[in-house]
Amino acid sequence: MKIKSVEIRTIALPLVRPFRTSFGTQNDRELLLIKITMHDGVEGWAECVAMSEPLYSPEFTAGCQDVMERFLLPNLFAYGDIRAEDVAGTLRPFLGHQMAKAALESAILDAQLKLEGISFGSYLGSSRDLIDCGVSVGIAPSIESLVEEVSDYINQGYRRIKLKIEPGWDIEPVSVIRGMWPTIPLQVDANQAYTRNDTELLKKLDAYDLLLIEQPLDEHDIVGHALLAAKVSTPICLDESITSYESARDALALKATTVINIKPGRVGGYLESLKIHDLCVEHNIPVWCGGMLETGIGRAANVALASLPGFTLPGDTSASSRFFKRDITTPFIMEDGQLRVPHGPGIGVEIDHEFIEEITSARKLIPAK
Ligand code: NPG
Image 1 (tube, helix red, strand yellow):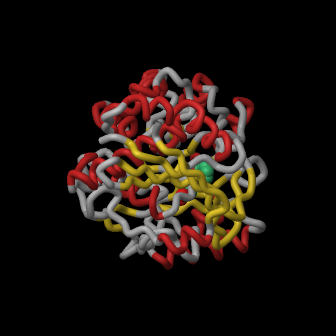
Image 2 (image 1 turned 90 degrees about the horizontal axis):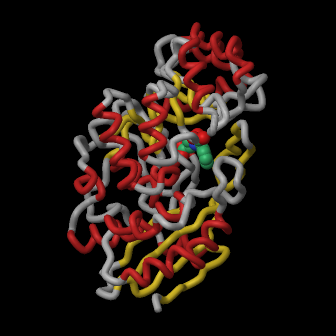
Image 3 (image 1 turned 45 degrees about the vertical axis):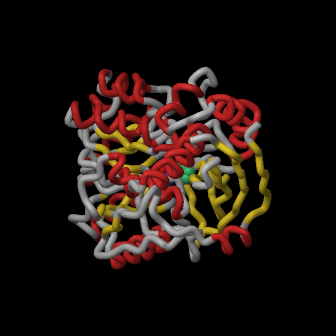
């Protein structure tokens, strides 16, 4: 396939409720949408999961657009006849920028699979049609509102609850939710909010039968996570620290993590995600699919990934309604706590072009030279 042009749009979707984590509060989701048009007419779509500010990762929307325009796209245009499998290799000289690279690789993969009539799920090696849904619950203004929000999700059928925590919002919310729902699969996510000095506090979480504690310490503190993992009995799961196959391999070797959250954007794409999945299967390490407030475009590909055999824990693969009143694709609707893996070619969902127009704040068409 030869690329004819790439369109980069900035869109913003309001969230159904503010989403607070230890790194900030989101009221809406700004993101880049990528449409790649090939010379034979086929189009590939993807979203770039970077946020508008570099609070979760060093990447951010305007920076992603800049690196795409300045370095990544000229390289892909010059490559000529390209397949998704070629993208990571040709972009390797440009360091970092996994989210920008992942978006371009995914759009090319969508076009390629549409051309070949293959779904994302079949291409990646899906082993089931339905995946279990978990939900990520933000830091709430009060314990009462947290209980109300969690009850609502449990009534909707979510099969696993993840509570966002930070210093001052940890033991109490966890003990209240565990007390009210003694058997629901429950886990917590700190987004790097603690330090090595908080080991005694984090040990207290062992009393609540949690599936895992996600990314308690700084993303660079792999040794700190290994030291913590040796002291707490709850499994430690790395998220932000896992930015590639190599970082996953090394964190496993150091026993800094015994569960892995795979987010395709964070690791540079679905092909790198597949390598990490295979590594974890080989080491008998449970895997789950993280979420980054994706629209239906990114969610479709994540749901396909989450249907691989190593994804044995429910992911942050929630229904569209968890975040948006209206999605930009046919919405993902939960059936009995599960989402259906799309079967159509490529990402396999219908795109709502009219709605995308309405929420576009900027667009740029870049023709391949
Ligand atoms: O279900 O899409 C979802 C959100 C899950 O909590 C979630 N994501 O730290 O994992 C995270 C967090 C996040 C959201 C991270 C947005 C970065 C951006």
